[in-house]
Picture 1 (tube, rainbow, N blue to C red):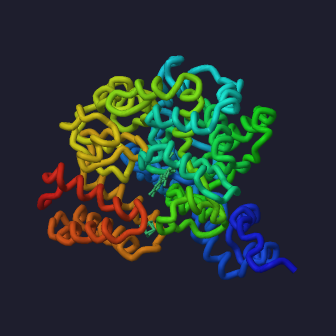
Picture 2 (cartoon, rainbow, N blue to C red):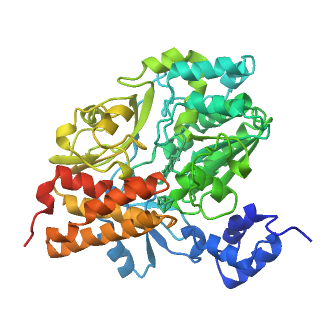
Length: 505
Ligand SMILES: Cc1cc2nc3c(=O)[nH]c(=O)nc-3n(C[C@H](O)[C@H](O)[C@H](O)COP(=O)(O)O)c2cc1C
Ligand code: SF4
């Protein structure tokens, strides 16, 4: 007989395979894996793609999709007799409003096409450039001492592109210092922050850069197993990645690479929640320290990087850290900026790190209408007024402005949008996506969302009198970044757009 919990890492995959959480599937998975039924219910119900079996249209509720008529579209689809589920974000803001059909295939409503920066061999990621299957940077790394590779990353000034901006070389070094020799590399491809779709384009257009970066990382930190945690709604991206791994099977032969599909929980983008999910548990963030470089997947040292961070590595190896560093305007390197909303050419643009909003929008075809605000780095970054359009979009300047670089998911908002409503859409996202582990976040996200909703209905600013205090509690008392920043959309909208929160008739 197998040990209790012996196969717990398989339970979510098995539930998905059996069509989601039902009495029968839970019973069967418990028998197959040795995990108690109650535990399987609790885990399965955490994940939206597992919890609700059945076919339906999934319609995106992200900020840009809302600005571009998601509510109206929901009514139209319902009138056609379709069952519609409103979901937090589908990572298709450039194609807003977006939905997935009953087979999880993307449906867009025809107005726009994704744009990317034109082919330029001077760009490390060069989304429009030719695909390089040589894996020559990996071959070069195999002739270099590991310390030299890490020195190049340091000289490059490569900061994590997943949101926190932590220097990459620190993490690689930390892993190498661990006495434990069983180590893992994990690629965070869970991308689910409204406004963000850069990792999607990287996977679709340049997946070998990411795979080569992962192999280089595994070589340097001496890991054999690589996990790619890919958001579950990225069905096409899964196919592309799978075939890229097959295409490069000889170059990647030294590594065991697994793609694990996410299951529809934004919080699993947080690195420790991701690890919990990989281990077959609810995706609830861990307390840090210990950090994953010390105790990560299965309690072993684990290097976790965002898709974009890791995809920069081959070019750094080829052309040197100093070259990469010099590409930036105010901070090191080039950066993939996602831009959507009221601009002419939504898409992903690789530009020097630290360009201003005006420079980014110039690449993206110009503003539409009279812009009043922008959200520079996903829902977590709140809103800035358009008067800050000259501010460098980098880690330091945005943080000093009370915002953040985050995932560089920039959304431009013009004067057709009510900023109280824009704040409400973002707050709704955080309420839905809180994992519920800590009280300030679980209760606070619900409270402030409800109060803004009341304000919009009643026009009475007194409904928001406690919002600031609750926001403070959330920032101070939450375990992870979600709860710490979830009040930011309201706080920043009230600060920069006080006229949107006055008494209304
Ligand atoms: C709520 C939350 C969601 C996150 N989502 C993502 C994500 O989807 N993708 C990602 O790469 N990082 C995400 N992060 C950041 C990760 O925790 C982690 O910092 C990152 O994967 C490390 O890789 P990097 O150093 O290459 O940036 C998220 C963080 C938080 C707090
Ligand atoms: S802050 Fe929110 S999302 Fe993060 S661990 Fe706590 S309850 Fe979960």
